[in-house]
Length: 286
Ligand SMILES: [Fe+2]
Ligand SMILES: [Fe+2]
Image 1 (cartoon, rainbow, N blue to C red):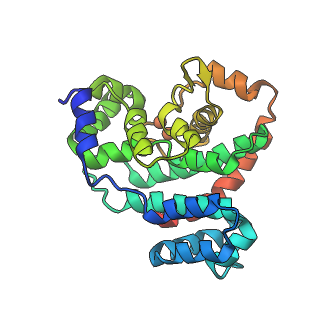
Image 2 (tube, rainbow, N blue to C red):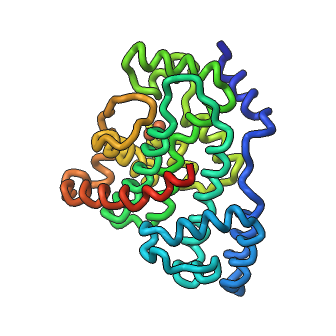
């Protein structure tokens, strides 16, 4: 068994951990320039044909509210706005990076894992809307990729992954606890390494790195808190699986900070159900 420092070193040296496509960088730069036109963004995305096709498929789904009505990327930018299109491109790219090369020998169910991830994204978005937090699209992505460290573990340290899976089943514990026990590090740490390598915005990094412990250095991360709660809600609602069948208790700090005490929970759960239905289109990218 490798110690955490050795695992970190292995991961830092793996040159084939996917990078995000250059187009993401290019779009970010274009978006930072107020002179940029919808056509220029459209052109930048269309240089990657496969990516452009995925983006068009997503923007034409019920999830974005204009099913079947958007014919070009430029059109998507005009209708949905720069920020939304950038988020769609980021999402499609992340799926691209992580759904290609997975080889599984264990009982870990990838299909259920992606459903858990997509549902967590949808639930995070609903929660952020519910509490009036302005970063709802970012919350969607944060929820979607919160457990990406598990995929990294599965791809790049398959023997260790297998041990964690077996230990989880044997002990009937949380995947997260099993990782701590077996590896002395978790999918949060691994996800954090990749989020950093990808230069993801701080909110997204927080969601990936701190969704099990949303208070860091005495500071509460709202995005991480939202993902923490969403992860638990979709487990309770039985959407997919994060690798174990348990429903952990919500941290008090999340319960209090997000105002669950006064929340209309039945309305929230109904909303999550609707959004998960719409977000099902993302399963087609897997
Ligand atoms: Fe997690
Ligand atoms: Fe999760």
